[in-house]
Image 1: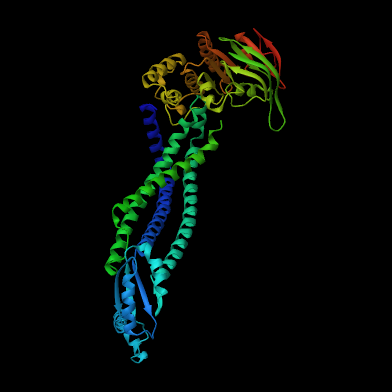
Image 2: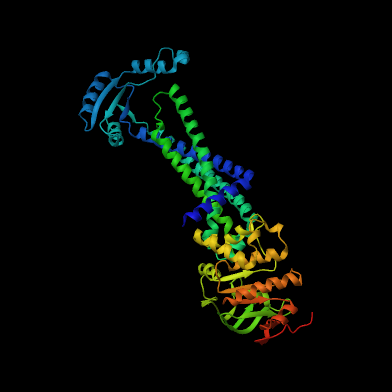
Length: 295
Length: 228
């Protein structure tokens, strides 16, 4: 492709964007909104994944004992637990201590416990740390077989819920993204169709004098790509600001919440959004010009 | 240059536009295509630059097999042809110069060639001093001359004209025919569909008459042969 031709293409694109300025602005806006929503879902799903990972990497097992299990027996059990393969640390938590912790967690609402009349329904328990996250499941299953052990929990319930939620968000997000992508394609292809229609005579003449289809197509495809690019830039900027805002808010209240740090995460998201926008622009314009090339 | 052997064209609705056409047009010939409206002249013309595809037979233009050529070769066929229409088909927002240069631009001709060729064809059609004008500032005859300049700027082997004088008064038409004569004299083959009896009778060139999709007359030095 000669410099002369590239120059011609660029002139055509600028000319055309100017000629349909309102439609162009509308298309760019639609692309921006769609890609913003797409980006939000992307970031949400990725953060959920990260949270699941964080849960999965936990090495703690809570071992709750039977009510009638004596403290002496518990001490023996502690020795047995410490002997288990892969166990790093075992801490005994007497029921009194568990109650104190529970009260702390309730804070202002600890008066609720008055109804218990000083009885303590909480069991004695052990906090067992294993060496590697993969060992948690087997270790918990083995611990449950010990006498006096009521149950051994390792956050599996929480994790299963998280899986459910992420799956829902993924499905819903995917469906929404498809709808938005189609809407964006439709808007872009309509804008380009207007341009193409306004220039159908020019296209016919180009065909008569022997321009190749690709030569005719390129300016329109470029126009679509430029619109997609501009829309995705706007979406990226807003996404970055939104994510920074949200992470700052969350860190204020929940300092240890496992969010993905802004850098380089936001760069990846921006890249995906920009490339996505350009691809949508290219497809949208290619679809709409096809019909007009038949001369 | 142009070879048709038993060419048929049947449109989708079953109408037979051309029926068993056999024609040979040699390099440098000047051929008039005459006949009543709807006889098949337009179909004949459009097949030459493959806007219409023949239904059967053999058709070669400038050595290219029109029927079996792939779509992506069509642009290259058209670069060897210059096409002129009754309604000029100029781009209103481009100047005379730009309209002509456009034909070179879109086939990616080198820029240094562009200026030389455009000036050259502007001289041939006698519009050198109007190169900055827009089409709406020109008369019909001048607009058609721009269209001719655009058709020949890429040095085509064949010029195909569909009723080029159809919208012009007799005097202007003669100016256009003079240009065609000059182009033909330089060795370019010309195929021109027309209703202009005076021109055909006066030029004494080869005349092919088509009626009801069939060639009814093919004379080396003929007249129009119809009354208006």
